[in-house]
Length: 618
Image 1 (tube, rainbow, N blue to C red):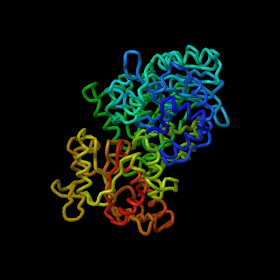
Image 2: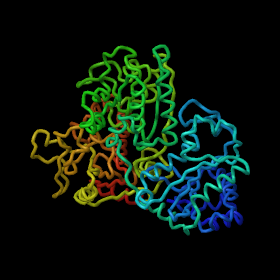
Image 3: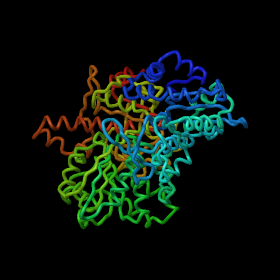
Image 4: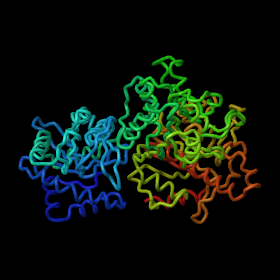
């Protein structure tokens, strides 16, 4: 998606004859239907005039393509200015320009991190050259027009208010300055930027290359499990961008500086698809390479087993399996045994451990006590059982009791769901988790379909399973008969739909098993993991009546452990029981409906619920 597109000549005309920020604002509203923060409008107003000045050079072709706010695939990020055309040899080029209004920064010892004034105070953010390079890397990795049609991407950063001072361009940042040149304030800098542009954009393209870039087929982002082998070999295949990189560097500093005398606890909050697990595994790999002793911890076994399985054949299992463990494994661990513990899906932590939930005191406390540095990745909106007690409040409480320094960070960049923040906000609104401004879902952002029959849903998902990355899942409203009788059907809907729950023999590896497209998965075999397309069967535990979303815990199967204790709680605290189970059921479907990187298909056993979802689609 492009917010504003033009040729160089048209852009200069719009700039000279109108308030360019208003032109961009109207284009943004037309393209996205969303509001724009005043700070972003001010950034357009403050920077695009300088860009216009740069382009007032007759040797920059008038018919060069120009885009403002070009969407980066698989993220919610946008490139400030993109120029397209051909170089002297006729090769297709795209110049990416990251614009900043900064006039001063403070260097840090962290890789690619600077400190500058943003909002009401100083903030640590990525260096502009790193930001431009990381955006270019994502285009090169995900845009088919770039890697198949040989469009060369040339990133740079332009800080038009910044006088060269030896800080922003210090040797510490040299590796990224070489990847993405930095241009600053002054006549000579302006000429250097013009020379850079003219080198790569010798001839115009009348926006043809721009259209190829904007309409290039997006290759699905690599699932973390497929890349873990490279990650553990210290060859990261994931480029961390913006807030991911900022948090990553801060976490490294925290883990390296933590000690028994000065323990550290980090709380990293992020919604579905913000890269929590990508960041967690990168941290595990890097911190391990530094000689720190630690583990990747998750309550849910599925992600751990999937990551381990992908490594078989590269190194022996004994060399890596110890790095992945469950959250209940620290009951008897001596204090500060580990330099660091990286806790993924921390919202799924339980109070007690063991098969019968009768061991230990509290998993959060045990994890903090067992390590000098505990790093918790959390999304409180993904609590899906009554026993999930992971919360920021609880983490803070136990950290403070130990005397640990607590740092809190948030991840906002969206990678799953085609980078659509709008889909996630719509999901929150349509499931009545919280009100948002996203009342309608635009299908251009993310592929979402409601099917009339479960047969049609399953067939559509099977058709998308060419790379074994499409699955069907459901709320746990049907008994697991096939666990005892392998010939029995579990999910029975109408006269024709007969399917089994996820294969017992595959266990936690169901989501990557070759034939599991034929089965139906549940929350426990997919949370923390992702596929290209997810099909979700919404059972009778969530229905809509007269526009109101109603949850019915009694429609869950009686063996469903996620609401174990519900009846007892109803007798003792009925209001709390209703509130908690309502949230658990809604969170479950929210989590299921955010497993797909490219699309989500839905079938509702209740007709009125299906119509309700359709009514909220554009």
